[in-house]
Length: 148
Image 1 (cartoon, helix red, strand yellow):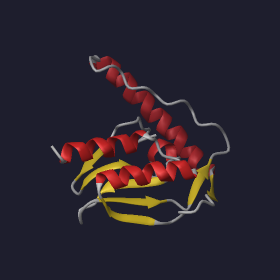
Image 2: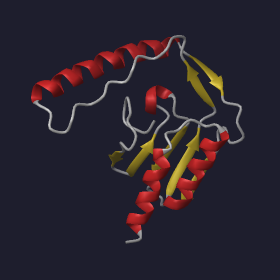
Image 3: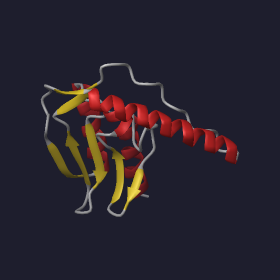
């Protein structure tokens, strides 16, 4: 459960302000954390107050083609991904938001080092918040990269 649309662990979105490690919309709106490199410095983590609960099971994820894909394979994957997105978007309109009821609901943590952010993500997951644990691993790797 990491970032970018349908999501795959380890996928990050790099924008003007830096890196987004995961968003509430990650993994079909099932991620409870929004973690990003803050333009004011450090890493910021926002914790959701609620989560979407779908009335039916989500369709299975569409795995991307291998790195040595052909143009035709890529076109098939793009079409399937768009079709799945349309289905999930329709399901989202029927989903309900339910409060999480966990200790850090609605809290934000600003200016964290990569290592502290990794630890905080792990702590929040341990408390019951949903987030792909790979996010913490990527933050740890970025900490190591920043010290070399």
